[in-house]
Amino acid sequence: MDKNDDKRIFLDFAAATPVSEKSQAAYLDASRYFANPQALHTEGLKAKEVLDSARSVLGRVLGVKSQELVFTSGGTEANNLALVGYLFSLEKEGITMKDCHILISSIEHPSVSDVFNQFISRGLTVDQVSPNEHGAVTPELVKAALKENTVLVSVALVNSEIGTVQPMHAIGKLLKETKPKVGGKTLEKTILHTDAAQGLYQSLVPQGLGVDLMSLDSGKMYGPRGVGVLYIKHGVKILPVLRGGSQEQGLRPGTENVALAAGFAAAFEEGVELRTGESERLSALNKELYEGLLAEIPDIIRNGDFKNQSPHILNISIPKIDSEYVSMYLDQRGVSLTTKSACLERSDASQSHVVAALGGEKWRATNTLRFSFGRNTFAEDVFLIISKVRDAVETYRSF
Image (tube, rainbow, N blue to C red):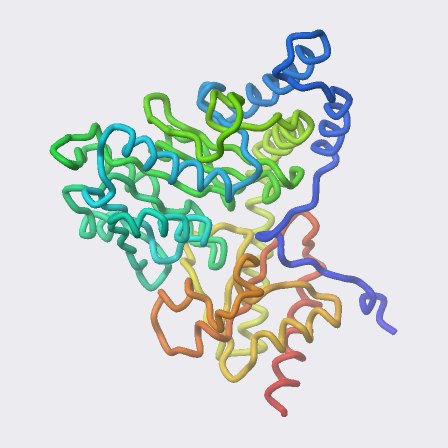
């Protein structure tokens, strides 16, 4: 028996990453400070000190003031707080939803695309911009879809399914000059939000990206699950979505989880330190895997942008297969991957809405496989992955 037969290869790092040793150590150390950081006694003040330290580390690495960061339970809550919270703030100023227009890309994660439903029923208009054939939401496409009353634009920095890196700086530069008119009022600018949960291998400095709101998720960045951060540019008004406390500058009630915050800060700092080396290593693995698969299965199609692509995601479509069969075949033989975003994997959707937005024949969106790499993916894994995918495809096609 081949010594590799019992080895499992995890290729779903876009959905979840393991907690790094540094992050786990920081989490365990901070878990000693169990007191409520809002309390004024000695134990509470110590817990607050640890929490403030974690916030300061994140602020320093991101190049922002620590007061511009709000801890959440993860990326989904950060997206909800950013988008819903901003619309709540407009309503507080007397602006009605029927006077507002929002623009998002058609390939957004559901934690962005689904949050506007409650406002649409109150008259809000939400339009979706389709990307080009590479999955890029260009500033030209955004400009063409803007309206006089567009109050907010939301585009994910890195698409979680195909890995395309969006030109956020160019979009931000475009929106910097906009002054939306809503309900007889002229706003300072159209707010730009980005879901940066998959942005571990990109520069995440908000000023460089040109964003006003940015969501981060620890569980996608080798930190503990259950914690995220929302960056809110100074001057941007947000109202809380949850009620019941004054924590996090009154924007996110509930006793802060000090240990999770410390673990996230350590993971994020480590991720930035490793970014360049890991990006180069994963880019090489990505290229080798694609070229190897193409040599064995010549009719595959690569989904995404070859140039502006995150190194940790490779998405392909294979004709004349059932992608769920292939993924289960691979799982039984030690290779874990998905057909689309994990948040949609168990839904009734039979195709990837992201790949469908790229155009082409219908099978392309139904026959997808997403390989996402991480620190536990190695060069010696590539040959094994290629051979098992080839076997899976040949087995299905021989039926």
